[in-house]
Image 1 (cartoon, rainbow, N blue to C red):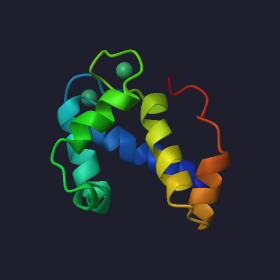
Image 2: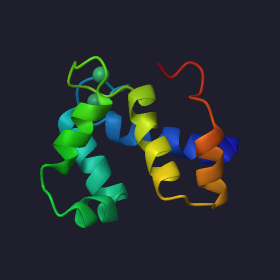
Image 3: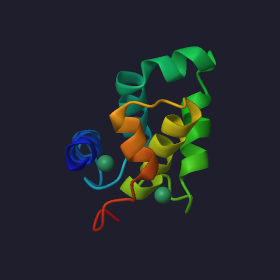
Image 4: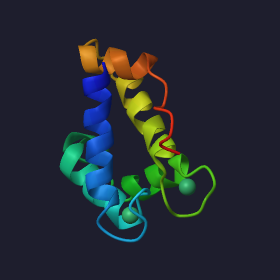
Length: 102
Ligand SMILES: [Ca+2]
Ligand SMILES: [Ca+2]
């Protein structure tokens, strides 16, 4: 379980560290993360604006940046929406945001 979560945290940090604040995702960084890590999500929607909408729905405080806990909601949504029963998704669905990532 800790391995799966730390993989996600690592991925988040790789993308978040590209510009601006290293602990939050800007719109461009979020775009890069989604298109490279979740290509099917974008492809299936058939809508280029889907990433912007998605970012808007996750950005709870509307500051244009996603913190790890804001981003985490997306992972939880994807895991539950797809009803995936792989170990990772089950762990994610039941996991809490790791303390100290805020
Ligand atoms: Ca950043
Ligand atoms: Ca935010």
